[in-house]
Image (cartoon, rainbow, N blue to C red; front, side, top):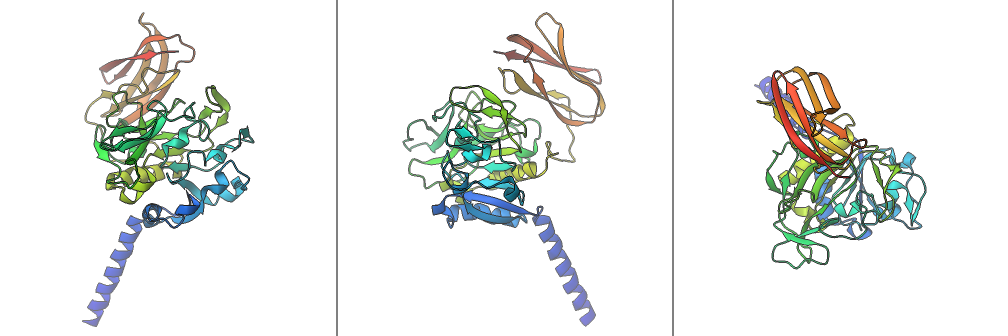
Length: 380
């Protein structure tokens, strides 16, 4: 009997240990940045607790060192101990300027070499990350979505607080959420104007779109998206994209108001988990799954219209010789994006039309005697 009891205890301990391993998929340290006033805040603590439950060690620090002030900016040598930086929405929209080497209006040397996950879309403005050329919030640049019934401040909008998943490539950033799903990222907010999520309309390319404001008919008000390493950004208001100011690591944004972080939903954490996976693994793009597509699909390119790059996504139910080509209105082939044997699954390719003139173009997918065509518009 004693021997059986010992075996039962060993088995129980083994099962518990195994479950803990499964619940903690990551290792390493994370730099969590918030304001001085929120270093012990309960909203940020809710996110920190989730990151910790995933096996990460979290250092909570003030954003002060990343502001355009006299505070010493962390060096790349100091930051290399961290897997990524997580920026709370409580931080001011200009607090992260030093992530890309800015001191006041002077750029001293490019982006810091650390991946970033931010819950603040206002960081997209030209004075901070430089994904949007403007420094003023509006429905066409960046802003907050305030719950219906509240009066939003200037430049912000009202809405249900829901987002719509627009990813069609099973990208890891989508956290396994289905394209077209309308979800809540958070359930409540204590912000005075009812702000619960935030968005931006980035005009750098390429962008990996994941979720938009549900009420946005244009599909441009992105709440969640990714920016790849090596993407050029804006340097000054009203200026052009500066090829010398390229991101040094991946950046994922999931716009959730600071006062709503304590009510993040399971779906919200799915997006955050997807972001963690993506920024920590430089080779990951498509969410790994055992389920293969059941049919051939060719998605609408994004963005569309575009200038000069856009992303084309398609799915194959089985392996096969595949070609993806672009044609002009005369039926002339102007680009061949792929012409090779591809495995079954979702595939995405970037199309650069910088050498083409404005107009309507067609992109055509051919695989296993299946041919699919869609139209896109280049506007320069």
